[in-house]
Length: 338
Image 1: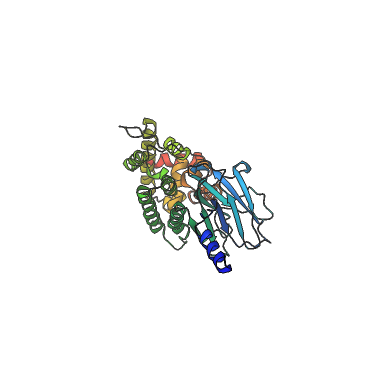
Image 2: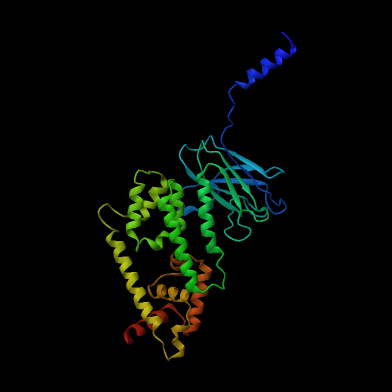
């Protein structure tokens, strides 16, 4: 057998050998400033959509070193075969591993969907801004997840120069777009992610049929994510919301209606000039007279506790009152005068 014949046979032999398929992984490439950030990526399992922005050491299920080129990888063989929501985050050198930065140029986390057989590749195309410009390759639901994040990013870009009315119109359009995305998406987790991003809590009292149809569409879904969502939307077959929620909604509507009458009335008494309140302050005032605490207002309006306190102080100053009791008395006087 000639040397040339041996080479030909070897080429033919290896050409017909089955290719070895690499095991699925979650891998990424991020250029970190290691003087600021620890060269470690952390993977957390998100047990429910209400825990998107909560953090504890127990949520972290794995960590991976980041090499000199910015590469890291997590094996997926220990994951479930069903889709779950995960979060990858990085920590600053002075912060503990279980630290979360929400918003701003130092936001340190992003979300992804994965399972045991999913191959997920993540790259940061911006570089200077850690979690902006993220590009997903591999498992396709993550590209849809990123599309939803791009839709919601317009909310963060609304500047102070935008009027309150225009801002509310833009928000309404974005939330409607997210509900349309949820309604047409074929992946259950992505669909649910879009709904949570649309702040469905404020929408479902006036759009009940949409959520009833949504739950009907995904009635066979038994994941913990849908179980949590169903508990938040107690829509029963052949009926609307529970009687309790009906009365709560009715009470809020009446309170809002009475508050709107209060705000529309122009008072000659400068001490109680409601017209000086901004739209957001009016919302806060209406909730104060309903007996809501600062924490309740913060959760309802999706604003920080410090922002609520700032609004309350501004309201007290403009109306020249000193307490929640004064606010309630003022409200009752306005109702009686009407």
